[in-house]
Length: 327
Ligand code: G3H
Ligand code: 13P
Ligand code: ZN
Image (cartoon, rainbow, N blue to C red; front, side, top):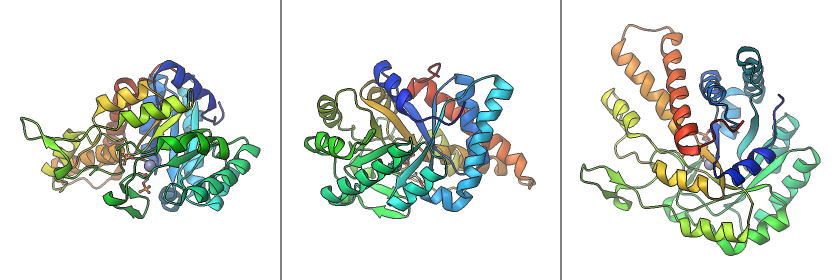
């Protein structure tokens, strides 16, 4: 199967009350770990590439690796793995155009930090070019706290999506999906300890997502696919391994899985996950070196790292997103 857009994936996900996982990719092992999980689970997939990932690995390497994964799925599993290749957080028309011209089937134009009318104009321009080339577009309204690429968005700057803007934005831009801000944020430190409460075991419990905003958006845009960024759960078993194996990540905290499951049952059709991939890989490699200080062949630690990613993604597909068996 060729690379596909999200059109059919999102329609089925919306109607079926599940979500598609959008995983950030930066190298071969990450792509293999994710796609192997999706093949085993017969799950549709979005692989997304940030500006930073393109700078790190180069567009052509990532594209060819993804094409190789599709070919491998056909040859070794006899399975047509439907993959959408998506630009994550495109910040200019030129970057979006370059990804569209380079074979991506979906782009995000993130004008969320711009004044509303500028966001509308930029998003509209990208949509016109993308749709002329058979590519779909994700826009964003509302600002997430945390890190977006190299730009630091401070917690004070974060502002929830204003439901009263969404119909106008979607109508005037023609976007195919909309990312909204309901309390998620990027990275492994989604909330400060002061924003959380602690449970009986002293574990940090983050404040709940703003489901009231999601419900209001859903009401105003019936049948329209909604996207959640910053949706890593920051599994505490990874944080513990990292801290026990020479790392230092105190008070890292993410979005509880049950809240993501609830969002997936609602209008959320795409859930973005990057930090959990990084945590799985880093925890595995740190542990490996503690247990095998003599190893220096990258295959000795990248192979279990790839397996750790596969296991983590399998868990998400089955237990959080509910998209297993949907391809
Ligand atoms: O939303 C941002 C993603 O986690 C991408 O991160 O810019 O470090 O590739 P990156
Ligand atoms: P996390 O940092 O929560 O994984 O978010 C990833 C993301 O939103 C990529 O766009
Ligand atoms: Zn994001």
